[in-house]
Amino acid sequence: MKKVLLLKFGELFLKGKNKKEFEKQLIGNIKIKLIEYDFDLTVTPGRILISGYRESLEENIISDLTNVFGLISVSKAVELDTSVENIENYIAKIDIVGTFRVNVKRADKTFPIHSTDFEAKLGGIVLDNCPESSVDLHNPKTHIYIDIRLNKKTYIYYESVKCRGGLPLGTAGSALLMLSGGIDSPVAGYMMAKRGLELEAVHFHSYPYTSEQAKQKVITLGKELCKYVDKLTLHIVSFTKIQEQIHFNCDEEYMITIMRRIMMRISERICEKNNLGAIITGESLGQVASQTMQSINVTNSVVSLPVFRPLIGFDKEEIVAISRDIGTYDTSILPYEDCCTVFLPKYPVIRPTIKKAEYQEKFLNVDLLVNEAINNMEDIVLTR
Ligand code: ATP
Ligand code: MG
Image 1 (cartoon, protein in one colour):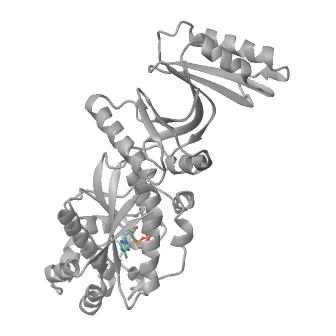
Image 2 (tube, helix red, strand yellow; image 1 turned 180 degrees about the vertical axis):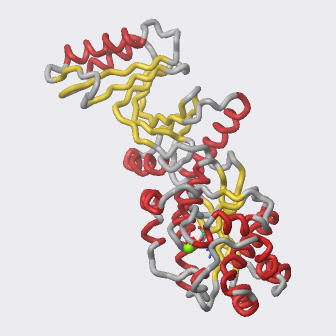
Image 3 (tube, protein in one colour; image 1 turned 90 degrees about the horizontal axis):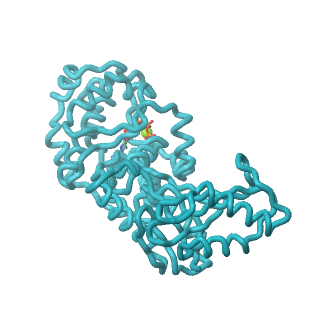
């Protein structure tokens, strides 16, 4: 009998080649997440097992595993060689007080007793041995799970810790997150990473109009995201000159629109340089003037890569709830300014047009500004 952590993974509709790739990536990601521990990892059909670690580190390991995308749950289990006798002997020794139910799952169809019959039999054994126990099929205090697997092993456990689900990081490719210091963009990055996208990030700052702390805050947010993505290259772009140029040369009303269009162009260039397949933003429809349908259209029109906006249909409250859950909220609300607040126009245009934006850009040397920004970019690699 051996103690193991039993890991279940999701998206089981994946078939054939996809499934192989999914599993391979998932196993690699688990090893990266648990890099600081000694442990053994065994892959069996439909389950991954972790064993051989220091007992005192078990809770830390479980907690780290909950942040591996693609996993559904982790259970502390015992492993037995599958046989009716072994399972019955084990169940005969457990001590149950209060209500319980037994759940048998039989992946190994050669096991000689049907699941429901075996559940009744095992339930009877518990009742015989534990006088203070009783069966409750609907709302039991203790759930006894018996997982009879194809590898001729059976896993018995009581509880499971829920993981975050999603798809293994890297199975969807890589994309660039536009990371501001706000609440929304870290959440957007988390949500796309959860669907299997590896992330890099870009941040635009307007030092000295924005402070050194504002930049530091974004570095902290990036590090907080590393809890999920392990590693994040952060491209830090100075936006100061671009903002000054826009401020001095363009119509005030269009200032934010033009800023956003230039941010998008720079982001796309970073994607091309680093082989990233999409841009991710934290925009939510109608939240501010720059996030109306017309504004999104005008900023989107300067890039040809897909732009993912996972928060587009979310209310602020819903975004805040995720932000708290993933642990970025407290940093996001620290009171440091973002470059978008520098030279902020009183009345930004709510329904800009592409034609008018293009006209405003005639007063700038956009290509030169984009090139300069790219050439002076600072890259830092963040880890957990
Ligand atoms: P957030 O909470 O993410 O800052 P927001 O509600 O403040 O979003 P905006 O300021 O309109 O909204 O920004 C919309 C999106 O544009 C952000 O979610 C982010 O993806 C991107 N963005 C804004 N400012 C920056 C910046 N300084 N650097 C990088 N990306 C930015
Ligand atoms: Mg913001």
